[in-house]
Length: 323
Image (cartoon, rainbow, N blue to C red; front, side):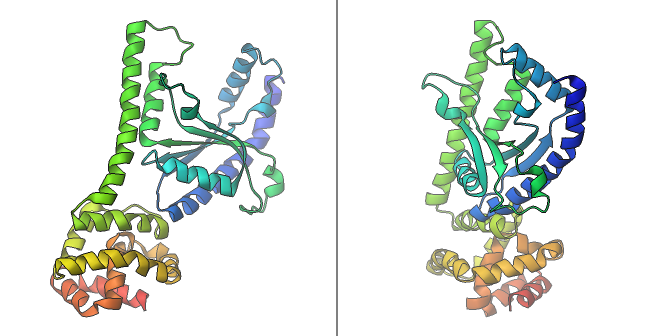
């Protein structure tokens, strides 16, 4: 295909891929928080110059029949997770919601004594049974790429790209060793962050921290936004101050069950007030679920706490939306 033909085809396709990228990003941003994670999601459509260069490169790599239509990453969606353990959640979601043409798990293909770039790459099509689009006929055969990485994998990828670490580049062995030592640190950090995160969830004695770790995923699930950690620590300290230790433990054990029982009501509250988060910032904090619980079980103590230590007008607003 001549360069001019590629240009004309891309001028026609690029707006469709752009629309598809927006819709897929929205779908991921709304779907993944239900699993109590909040990854960073972005997308980009390929530049015309990059398309031409890649086709030319593939031809030089003895794939002489490679054409514009063979290019699977004209749209690329990137999902960056906090922890490597989150990649399994995203993998499950993608397999349920999309049509997977090809899945490549970079880490699985490495020998035990090798270090290299790791992340999950998917060649994907939309699933019309899951993602209903008005213009589906226009893009039903479009294949695009989704890359799923942890923060550390993404940091390595960005750094390695600058360092030109790829095996086809001949660099001196001492320098190559230094690059590989760096890579090992990223991989160890990735495993350790995930491991420590789980240990903190399971065994930390600080009850306030345990409340935050238990409930932060609920913020991602219902509010679909991040929260302020310092504010949460302060508010939990005030909300729990008048409870004896055994009662605090009891509430910690019961609050997740309370949220499950009231799931539909909580969902409705967040949906109805999404455009008012700036007016009710407490709705985007983990302690909101403790406040809901206390409204049902310890309302007098809750009113006392807000009267003495927090903003009572905020409680009045929350009481108004909880009823």
